[in-house]
Image (cartoon, rainbow, N blue to C red; front, side):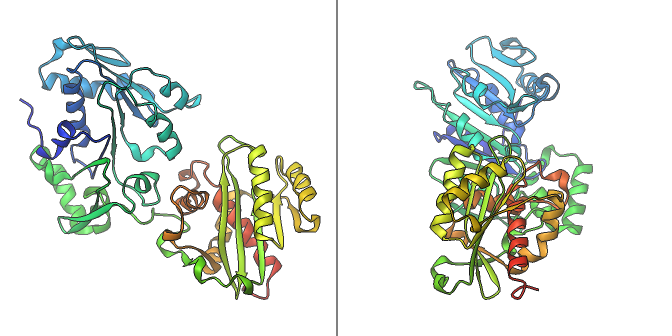
Length: 423
């Protein structure tokens, strides 16, 4: 007989669309979700899409876990299990298993085109890097005559993650768990379930409990985030910590007293690279980042948008990287803007080295908008998230370096143009 934790009852009872399951290690999130999905398959008319960001072989990693749950329920005779799908013989409902990212790239189009999905499960959801991918699949879960659900299972990570912005920011309350205050989402369309090992303690081996107790006594930060499941303000090893960045309010900035207005553009034309364009106003030895254009669109969109921003801010100068298609963009922008204001630069040094070298200057002299003045999911927000996620260990950055690289370019530009203000 399978005993279910009452904390997971909302999976069966709530009529909300979004279910966010968070918690630390050994919190039984995946176990109870799998049991729930097995029960859901007894209802006819369901097709469940179970995903991870990367899933090479479901028959090796995920499906054996589901077979174990079916055996616990003593229901083997009710299911057909293949290497990519589980079908309930009685109802005809099924679970299909897919990876979002494959060797061919992000598979949102293929996943969106699957007909009849009523429930989408994102396991290890913290690994899904962007909200846009989520939204595209989310909008395809819309069967008219069925209850539609989206279930995210995750270990909480940094508060710059899109999941925090989408499901928690501005809509949470703090609840104390074993001496630590943990955010709980109270968004109207979200059912948030947070569990820890304390909710599953009867099923944890004594040796693991000893390990957890040792962490609790000797590494309180690790205990709070890894075991209790709190949300971090910063990731370890990041160059620019969000809670330590210097901030300003646009309302308090004396625009007339600015000594110079500069911009720096890192060119991109679709693909995984972003077109990154920070705008900095220099005032009394400080650089205020008043705007940040950040886009994955192609040059037919980003080039005119950049021209519009140069005009809007009446920049004294803008530097544009001439690498790749930069020389063409420079020529086109010079035709629209006074040519002496549009400067070309060839960035020969390695990106990571440039960003590392800019760390002290940015942390000392750059000021960023207050969080309350940054529109969620705006270009400024997305760029700042990428900047604050950038790690000293290059292997952890997954190629997402355009925003911090453009910021490093702006820092070099400012320090070389106005050396009398910056040491």
